[in-house]
Image 1 (cartoon, rainbow, N blue to C red):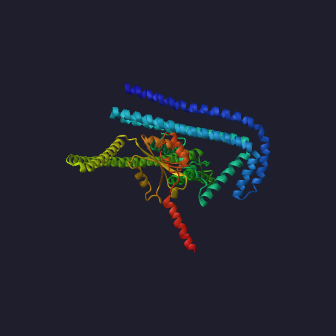
Image 2 (cartoon, helix red, strand yellow):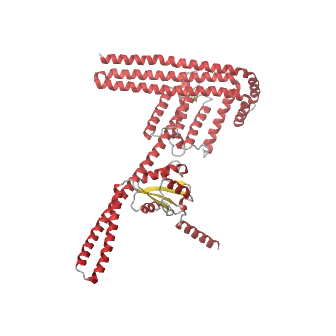
Image 3 (tube, rainbow, N blue to C red):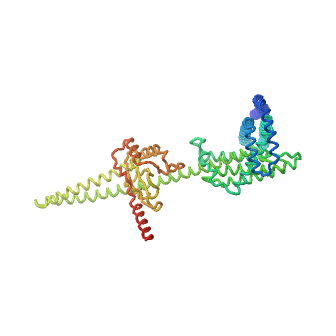
Length: 546
C-alpha cells in the first residue's frame, strides 16, 4: 500500500509538471511579445525615411553580379541607409536568440533531471522486488516520452520566439534588414571559402586557457569531462528529435532528406574539427565550426533553404568549449602530477643524502673516538718530551670529533625538520637571455648539487648562482617569492616552470622584505661558458673572413 501511495504521489507530481510547464512557457512568451511590441511602437516613426532609402538600394541590388562586390556594396549601403533601424532589429533578434538558447538549455536540464529521478525510482523499485520490473520499465519509458514531449515543446517555443523577433525586425527595418541578412550570409560564406582555401594561419588565435577564466578555481578535469558528456548528449538529442536543422519544403519526405543532408554535412565538418583539439587551436576550431555553419547554410539555399538552426550551432560551440576545457584541465593535471613526482624524487634524494651523511658522521665519530682512546693511552705512558706531541694530536682529534658531531647533528636536524631547506636564485644567460631568473627550492644537504642537475644536457650552458637562501620554512619562502613575481612569470600558462623576467635588484629587495638578510648576492652573472663560446665563434668568423 505504501508503495502504491508513493507511486501515485510521483505520478501526480509528474502530471502537474507536464500540465503547467507549457502554460508557464506560453505565459513567458506572451510577456516577451508584449515587451517587443511596445519597443516596436517606438520605432514606427522612423520607417518612412528608411523605406525611401531602401527603395533606392533595391534598384541598385539588381545590377550587382559579382558575389563579393555584391556583398560589400550591400553591407555599405544597407548599413548607411538603415543603420539605426537594423541595430534595433538585431538587438531584438539577439535578445530573442539568447532567450531561445536559454530556453533550450533549461529544457534539456529539466529533461535530464526528470530522467535521473525516474531512473533512481526504477532502481529503488527493482531493489524492492523483481516482480515490479515491468512496472518500473513502463514508468521509465513514460517519463522518457514526457521528457521528449517537454523538450519538443521548449524547442518549438524557442523557434516561435525567434520567428516572432524576425517578423518584428522586418517591420522595423523593412527590405534593408533582408538586404543586411543576405549580405551577412554572403560575407560569411566568402570568408569560409577563403579560410578553406588559404588556411586559417594566425588570424583566429584565442588562447585555450581563456575558456577556463569563467570556471571556478576548484573546477577539475573530471568536472569538465562530465560537462562535455552532457554537451554531447544534448547534441545527439537535438539531432534525434529533429531540432538540429530546418527546411522550407512542404513535402515531408523531401524536407526530411534535405534536413538530413544539411545536418550530416555540418556534423561531419564539426566532428573533424573537434577531433583536432590541442593546446593552441581553440580560436581556429571555433572559426572552423562557424565557417561550416555558413557554408552548409549557403549550399542548402537552393534546396528551399535547407539549413542548420542557430541553436544547434550554439550547442556544438558549447561542446567545443567543454572539449577545450577538458583538454586544458587534463594538461594542468598532468603537469601537477609531473611536479609531484619530481618533488617526490627530490625529497627521496634529499632523504638518502641525509641518511648517508648521518651514517658517515657516525662512522667518522667512531673512528675518531678510537683514535682518541689510543692517543690518551699513549699520552698516559709518554715521557715529558712525547706529551706535547700527543696533546697536540689529542686537540686535533677532539676538533675533528666536534666537526663530525656537528655534521651528524645538522643532517639529523634537516631530516627531522621537513620544511628546512634552501631557496636558490639562478640564471642562464646563454640559454634564456638577460634578466631571466629561476627561483626554486631544494632540501639537499648540498644545494649546489640540485643546481648542477638543472644545468644538465637539457640546456646548452650551466646555471649561475646569484643567491642561496637558507630558511627554516623554505616552501613558504619559495611560494611567497613566486606569488610576488607572478606577473613577471615567463610562462603565463604554467607558472610552475619557476622562470621570471625581472631584475636581480627587484628579487633582492623582495627577499629582504621577507626578513632574509644574511645572504651573499652575486649581482652579475658570470656565464663563463656562454661568453667563451661567443669569443670562440667571433674568432672563427674572423678566420673565415681572413
